[in-house]
Length: 144
Picture 1: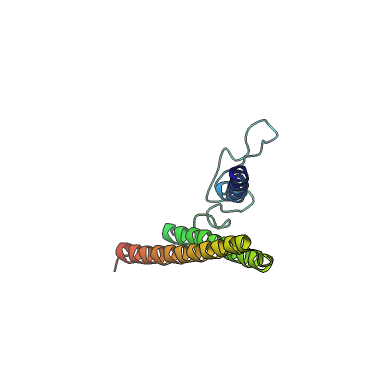
Picture 2: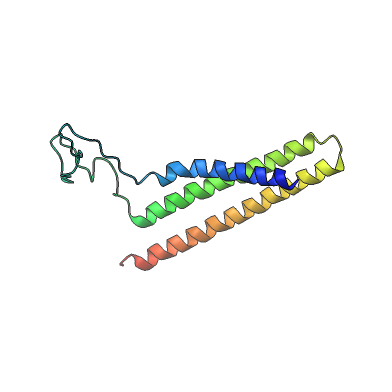
């Protein structure tokens, strides 16, 4: 039983890592090599280049305030966790429906459903706290 739980935890950790990797790679820059062996973009001009592209406004990078960016990241993260909690509840319901009256399987299904409900409560509480903190932080830092 312990080997199964360890294997299951490793699979869940691997999936979460695979899903988090693209999020972690968002800020990385990749420079292509130009014809002369140098790195293209060494002489970066944020006002615009020879193609008329302004790196600060045309790419829409860095135009949002930091508080809004943090709020967006928290919303996405908590939404993703909410989806996982709902999937856990649905998995518990599926196990209960396919238990065939076996008390052990029904008990496992009840544990999954209760864990999913507790997870949803925690996620909704975290969302409410984060929203409260960010709104009060914005009100405290905005000049009247």
